[in-house]
Image (cartoon, rainbow, N blue to C red):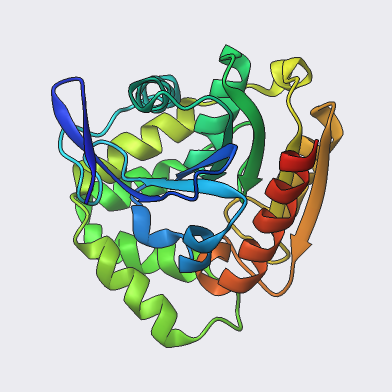
Length: 255
């Protein structure tokens, strides 16, 4: 399991090295970790796949951050430490916000974006904060029920709930604070790299209209809608998101 030290703490990532011209860097969402992403992403021949655990998440050390810009700095440092040169950022939910923030920072190494189940602002209801403070297990159950489509297998929902119960509440509160404070509505038009926007058709947390707004406001963006799928689209539809990413990255190699 490779690690890189960032801000004095170990950052865990998985790596599938194809000696390819593109590097795919996958960024999970609030309270998530590297297990969100389908195994198929690590088998794409057209890119080297790096799957991160953000600080304080999964197998990484350090503390969770409380702003998207702070997480963006971590990812930018990761790319610099590994000396990656042509990067496609794949972000889910809060990870998508991190990718958007990095695009606005305009690093020379950024090739393009894949934005899954995310938006240009990610408001979190106050009752969500309150429930995580008073009854974290109840908060997990509620969020998991909201995170999947009605046709998702109950076993899949239960497995994700079990994983989330192991996430310290303070990590969730920091992540949700980062999401709640994020808003780049007025600067989306400044993003100059191509973007693939992916949305589930039944996403209760970042509804389809969020993705449509990204497609409308980012100059070079296109939208793909996956059905049926909720907010945890990578878990519900692993084959479909792998296909979409493979197609997009393959076209970036040829561009």
